[in-house]
Amino acid sequence: MFDEIYTKASDFLARHPGTIAWRLKAHCKVAASHINDDEEILYTFAAQKGPSAMDMISTHVVIVTDKRLVVAQKRLVFGYFYYSITPDMFNDLSIKMGLIWGRAVIDTVKETVILSNLSRGALQEVETVLTKYMMQKKRYYENGITEEEVDSVDGDIKEISIKGEKKF
Image (cartoon, rainbow, N blue to C red):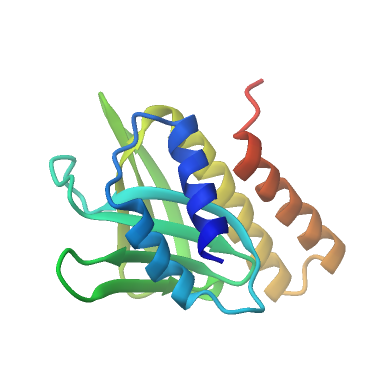
């Protein structure tokens, strides 16, 4: 599990080198320990969790599984931070682009998760993946789509994870 998460996070950073991320292996180990055996990893990326672009030491790994979003960080000395966002808790997503970096703001029922210091090129890819995922899951829980449609969207997200988003 760790290898898959680390590989996808590394691939994301290779596609978007302007994204700031530190201690990726340690964060991926924390995330891997919280992914259940029945979950499938669709997409992984790294970002700073917090509103300030100057806070460059709060790297978190974000994993999109077929059941939820997992946000994890290994603390510097001991312990870790772990957040799980299930589709029923998801309210809204907004993307904000700055001069150098951008941020993705995930609004949930309980809190707002701000993922900052993302490369400007990564913003569209992150937005596409999170929007497709959340729309698909909400429609599925409301009995609006079939299992085949869910599998199709999951396949699209996996393809973006491997190749990046296609530019038209």
